[in-house]
Length: 70
Image 1 (cartoon, rainbow, N blue to C red):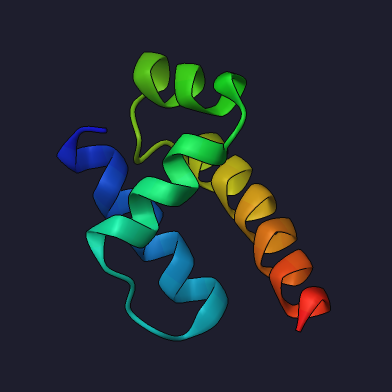
Image 2: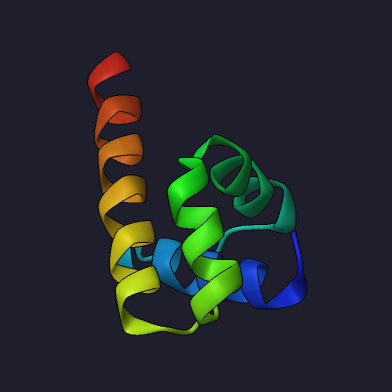
């Protein structure tokens, strides 16, 4: 995961949860997101609006399922 991906994932996670996340949390999201999102990020750039929205959709589902398990 490059710094651009980490920064974007961090920002998206902050928008979703309202809390800051460390590099390990960002890496966890990066490693579990679909390859299609990672490929889009590499091709279009991590700050691209569609890439950010795809990450947000994925992360929202991920965090919703984490909350459901509690």
